[in-house]
Image (cartoon, rainbow, N blue to C red; front, side, top):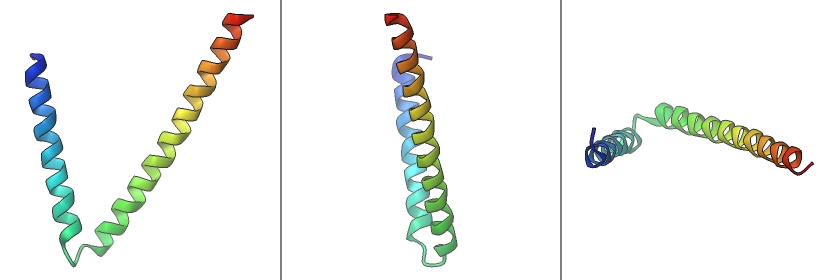
Length: 68
């Protein structure tokens, strides 16, 4: 795929995802869905923080070994 095609595909996928999330969040009956989504995003954020901390520790270890 060309670079431009990938960019357009990414923009379209993001727009579709945004529209789906907006539709789910805008419904009055979607309180359970809202709770599940917020829990999912919180879990995703927590796991991302953990992974980032692991990567940072790994980089620090490699830097300290390279200096020694």
